[in-house]
Image 1 (cartoon, rainbow, N blue to C red):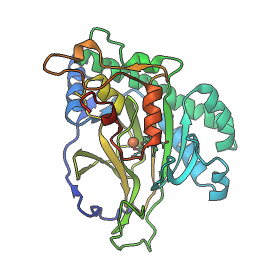
Image 2: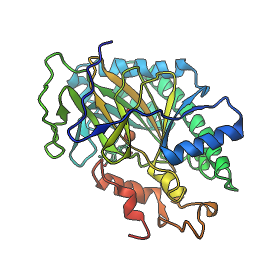
Image 3: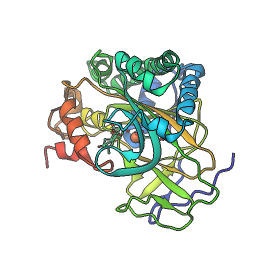
Image 4: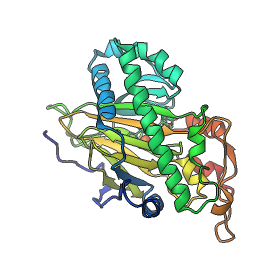
Length: 336
Ligand SMILES: C=C1C[C@]23C[C@@]1(O)CC[C@H]2[C@@]12CC[C@H](O)[C@@](C)(C(=O)O1)[C@H]2[C@@H]3C(=O)O
Ligand SMILES: O=C(O)CCC(=O)C(=O)O
Ligand SMILES: [Fe+2]
């Protein structure tokens, strides 16, 4: 594999640091403490020994590869995304652009089986691969959320996982495909956030910086890097690819439910490889009518309630009315 030397976007600092790795086969109370610490310090960690068979991941990767290898006009028949469907460069409805093509799906089993016809010549194979992945990711997300509840000492230990166990959960599934750099790639430093050119010295902004709005995101990728997280404004930490592991992001809803104790991590994908990056994201979300508020144990005289209660439907509506990089959770702060 040939990887181009990553070049920072103008004014960004790249800082390699060791990211937390959680071995899920460890002793339960120790694992839950480590997860809580990782969510507080990074809002992000890697999970190993997660129990999801590699076969489940590779079947989806194969479906993804088959779809993205089709000619563009054929793929565009499955778009534009509304928000579900095939998207090419446009991210969302508000003018955000990236060097990425993607499929975004609702995880409801009926909707998966219905839309599979649009994405594959073998819809039952596509549907079974995607459903298998979603079920495995949902279980893993529930396990992690229960460990979080234990580690936070909340009395109702299913307070987080119940939201995504609910049959009406609004979780989403996304396949991202970032094209490789071409040999004659633009090497002029032309990055500018406003004109959406999104390129600088052999690196491309595949997916602009943002936080995920949901509770938790589980992400797997092929062995091509590109994901970066930001712990301090303007400082980016590359996330090394590991196709055998899941990366876990704290989302905005979990930040609200932990009363700001966990951080919804800002991240982006910058691709600078002659190989294409593929990632698979499972966004664990509550049902639309779920009321999002911190459980009583998270609120103390020294840490008063930070956000007003809101429904997921309300939060989602706000998210979709804003740009990718906006800090939407601030709009729900009680202190304005
Ligand atoms: C520009 C947008 C795309 C997005 C909805 C939004 O208006 C702002 C948040 C975006 C995001 C980021 C994380 C996930 O990839 C996503 C599915 C989500 O829930 O919020 C996307 C949305 C999208 O692509 O539809
Ligand atoms: O491809 C990646 O690593 C990041 C994708 C992402 O952040 C997203 O789909 O929300
Ligand atoms: Fe994301």
